[in-house]
Image (cartoon, rainbow, N blue to C red; front, side, top):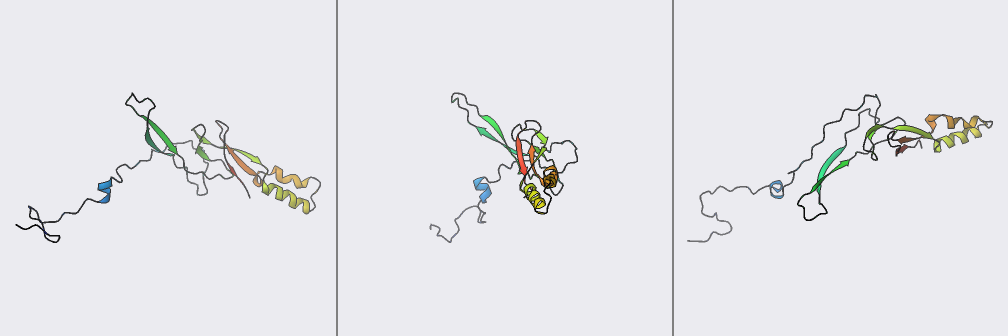
Length: 163
C-alpha cells in the first residue's frame, strides 16, 4: 500500500473535492446585523430639518452587555447606547433628539449679532448712515447668527453662523 503524495487523491468513499468553508462561515462575520428601530411618528409641524426637506432619521441604537461590579452574582446588565446622526443647523427650527434630556424636540431659536451683522453695520457707516441707521442690521434676524436651544431643558444644541 502506498502513501498518497501531494498530488494523489486519498482513497475514500468520495473522490469529489469539497470547497473549504468561506471566511464568513469560519470567522462568524455578519452573524449579528443590528436592525433599525421603527420610526417614531413626530408632530406634524411642517418644519424641515435640512436643505433637502426630508425628515430626520431616527437615532440608531445598539445594546451591549456591561459587566456588573458584584462578582458573586452571575448577571449582566444590558446598556442601550444611542448613536445620533449629525444634525445640520440652519436659520429655521430643527426637529431632533436632545442629547441632554433625550427627548424629541423642535429647537427654539435665539438670534445674536455675528460677523455679518458687524460687517453690515460697518458698511452702512462707510456709506454715510452714521446717525443711527447703521444699527439697523442689529434688528434684522436674517443678518444675525442663530443659536438652537432645547425648549425642554434649555441646553444649547448648536449654532448657525452666517459667515
